[in-house]
Amino acid sequence: MSEKTAANLWGGRFTGETDSGFAEFNRSFGFDRRLFSADVQASIAHCDALVGADVLTAAEAQQIHSALQEILERAQREPDYFKEAAEDVHSFVEARLTDIVGDLGRKLHTGRSRNDQVATDLRLWLRAGIDRMASTVVDTQAALLEIAEANPDVVIPGYTHLQRAQPVLFAHWCLAYFEMLSRDRERLGEARKRVNVLPLGSAALAGTSYAIDREAVARALGFDSVSCNSLDAVGDRDFCIEFAGVASLIMMHLSRLAEDIILYSTTEFGFFELGDAIATGSSLMPQKKNPDSMELVRGKAGRVFGHLAALLTMMKGLPLAYNKDMQEDKEAIFDTVDTVSNCLTVTATVLRNTRVNQLRAREAAIRGYLNATELADYLARKGMPFRQAHETVGKIVMLAIERDCELNDLPLDEFKSFSQLFDDDVFKALSLDETLSTKSQIGGTARERVSEALVAARKRLAAD
Ligand code: ARG
Image 1 (cartoon, rainbow, N blue to C red):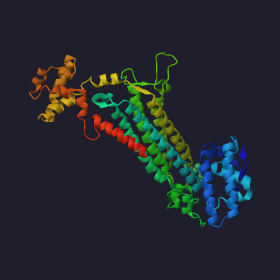
Image 2 (cartoon, rainbow, N blue to C red; image 1 turned 90 degrees about the vertical axis):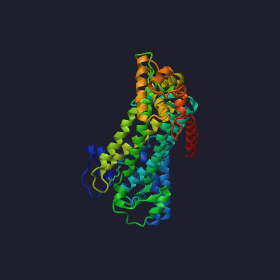
Image 3 (cartoon, rainbow, N blue to C red; image 1 turned 90 degrees about the horizontal axis):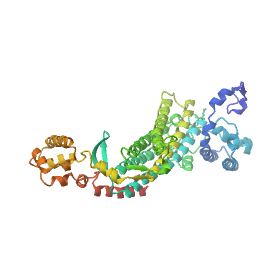
Image 4 (cartoon, protein in one colour; image 1 turned 45 degrees about the vertical axis):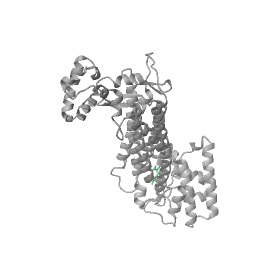
């Protein structure tokens, strides 16, 4: 089984034929066709640069331009356009160009290598991917604000170690995830800066010997700057790894949100009810309503972390500059963008289809001694050293457990038997309202702080 070398981009040096199994193995067109429009766009910019370098005449460039334009349009129109066999997207575009303009098409590769070409294409593609993803992050943040604003009075138990700790406003919980996604958005912006550097003009590894105005190419393609070292430019995939790192953090955050939602929708917690639109039933158990949407988001985090690990491992120990190992970057990057974007979208839909059970959440927030810290603070405010207050309240909690009641249910006399500092006002201090309102410093869960934080969050979102 063999394939004619004439179909390759490297005719002259070879007399033998490529093994067809290897040709298939070597081929990336099955997936890198997603770089098609980036490749055409970069080819147009390179074509213009070749005019400046006196390689092409203006008339030749014009011919190439309209042929590349035609290729773009045909790809959109003809579903079978990509059926044509090709090794990769770069050879595909060059072959289609040559179909239209003949030998002139073969001039376009002057001063360019697939090494700087693929790095340029991938950066263009990823830049657009990051921009789309950033706006999906914003939409998920908007969904968090919507559900928070729709439930301003809801109180839920806050947990540490998944044990009831202190009550918090439901909106405060929403804003916690809003903050995580804000940092993610910032990180996407940071990563984008390092994506947006032009490698084209580095050629295979040593730089180009034609008078190509790289700055002009960068401007034409919307890059902020040009790469400073040709060896680095074609051998670098830091931008992919950094992006996969940012994407992994997004998935880590989404998986924590998913886990909270899954947990809070159980019968045991009962704080949330998932809408029919984003839940599934069981083929066997008629009563079931399963949070598959959130479970998939939680599960897909592992897939994205896997891509990060794959990219790091693929690059580790590679000698300078380009190596074919690097062809493995694309599927990881494409799937990372797809997966994270889908997970963000589904999460926003889940938030928009979730009902909060105010009563259940409140019941849970006032049972289980979530106000014990208030009691210690009460004693501390009256002058008892906090350590001692903590110990005293620990004993009062033991008594309440014994009596099978909450702290507020104990009579004042009982309190007084632990310390003379206790007075009538202890019951106010133990109330749910007081527990919340005392958390009034910046970042706390007091009602005024949280409503301010909601307004500020809206403004931040609108500013983007
Ligand atoms: N398909 C290749 C890749 O994705 C393009 C670059 C090939 N360069 C080379 N010298 N073989 O990395």
